[in-house]
Amino acid sequence: MENKPSQSKTNRVLYLVVVGVLVIVALVIGLTAAFTAERNQTPTPSLPDENQGETNPPEDENTNGEGDTAPEETPTVFLAPASGVVSKYHDASAPVFSITMNDWRVHQGIDIAASLGDEVKATAKGTVKSVWKDPFMGYCVSIDHGNDVVSIYKNLAEELVGNVKVGVTVEAGQVFAAIGESASIENADSPHLHFEMEVAGKQVDPLSYISEESYRASLSVDSSYE
Image 1 (tube, rainbow, N blue to C red):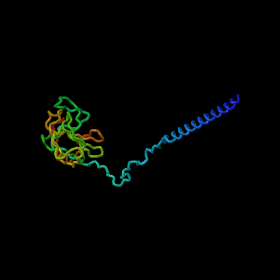
Image 2: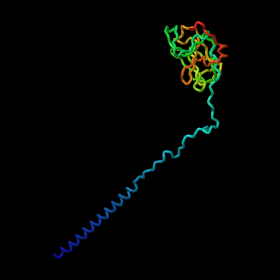
Image 3: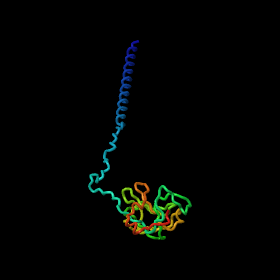
Image 4: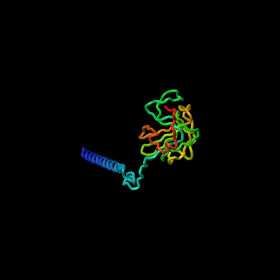
């Protein structure tokens, strides 16, 4: 009977020791986990400003007007693009008879009848805008004279003269092509240059632009034209 209090005391001591050890172990585990989490935590990098290190495109150095290239002025004198007879006139409203198509249709330019292979000249100074083959009007060239004025040459021979191509500057009166017979819808007519002019994208009568002096020197009228 005397050993009971001693045994009970011993058990309490062991219990306290075990509890203390568990508490210490729990603290160690908690501290270790906290330390590990802190070490493994990856800081979120701050995103750079989208514009950081970038600059806006440089402004046009000529915005102050210095060194600006003035747009080319529209020529005031236009030359006849070929020498020959005006066999058909411009008429966007009243149809004219087409021998080839055997019908009546509007005619957006003028026809200058001449010989096959005769010279075709630039009506004024300008830049070659387009070179193409039209399925109906054959080989064609357009020249931009500035300020929305464009001259158009159709029914040309396939080969152009010299180094004429898109972007090349031609002078007034410069020979750049020859009269052909490539226009399928006008091949029953005698060889001729089909010549058109546009202002701001609208067809105009070329004869109203060709100077009177050039007209008298290079063109004549077909009296059979009605």
